Image (cartoon, rainbow, N blue to C red):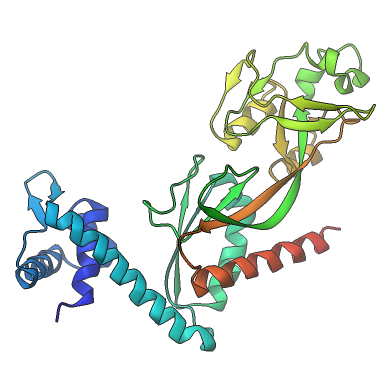
Length: 304
């Protein structure tokens, strides 16, 4: 019988792109990885990988086997998870992804508390401003902010935070008065920042009419692809923008940023845990989602 350990080694080699990188990921020597890969090919009677001094390439048989290999490993892990479900013993690896800012300021303290409850569980956290493709990149869960596009993903809301239009005091000093910061026309004379990753924000004007706050206006003096950079440019006085309160609470408290358009009602930004519709969430994913919901509810009560 072919060992599932060799399935796992083969998948690791493909995902890592080299025997050395796979060995580092698995905590094995390169020689052990190479030996098991050769034995797997011998047991199957096919060549799975074409090796050269610079890179590895899957053969046609390797491509087909990889698909079945992943399915078998996932099914085996699901069976293990199911067997342990009643004992609430979470083990193995949980791979998740989110933005760098949200990870640092909101998620990591919660993940550490969750990990402390399940010391046998390994957490692999990847951060990127751009949304990851869950299935090809093999993430179990993604934490995403804002409106979600229609997709094959199941979304579960974790928390909500208000959005706030802000500018630095040094920039607002260009206006004729403090009240001018709440006037869209006068505020429009100041430079704007662009953030293409955030959709235009619907707001309600003081007279009850609907309006949009453009997050990536055509006249933006600076455009960025990350919330940290957007915040830094705002604090530096480069332009007016909109940011979630969780990211700028300290800046508002220290008067590094000030709210503008205070008579306009800005919406709240939802934070979602998402996973593919095509797969049933594992006990690890379900328990983490439930834990995060409770964690954020507790935080909100503490800060009331």
